[in-house]
Length: 273
Image (cartoon, rainbow, N blue to C red; front, side, top):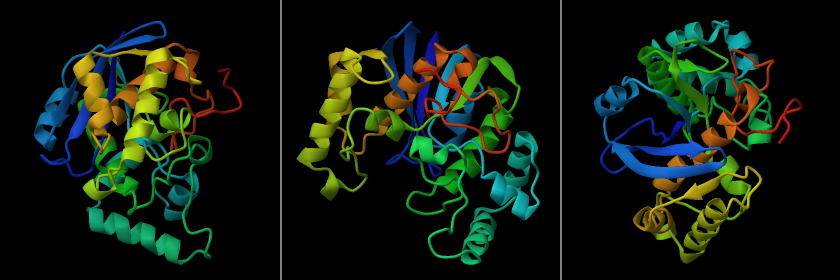
């Protein structure tokens, strides 16, 4: 099975490209074949439109909180919601979300999806630190336009299947220590040591997802030495996709909310690990 893991950014550029890890899964073994960077939308969209087959986990939220969507009176099917949001300029999206938050009490500003707590992820309406609302805005419209299957949310090409991923969920199964920073001054020896622990656990399969990673030496060095961990995050998403590929319904809840979606490998009541 061909596996892809995508570390996404809402503003791809040479200094911060979209990073895609490619691998082959054989049961619980994942061989990473290489990592490709896309520094603009055109190159990323051209890759996304290519024929499969692949199963991929993408590091951005696929949905919004049902509470938020119902409050705003927005569409409650995935494709219609994505089209509605794609038609909004980024500034208007931010102002809409900000107005929602400003009307709510301190400590309960953001509306959360059901998957946020078990995944340990930020609310998908958050527009700063990290700006995952913009990632939702840019990422989902391109999945829809490319015609891929967004599993449980939208039927498209059955040979290209996209799952929502979150590398932090996989990394925290190994260590709670911070392992990355985009600021060079914060790319410390301690964070490098955390990346070493993560890579070692992935290579041995000694982590809760149980996927065993096979890496070429040069790629292993890159995963450890890159302080931003963009390549490592792409590989962590590939690990989540491999885990999902071993399970019925890709390990997602069968009662999947078509507005909110769910993060691959995030625990839920129906899941048997």
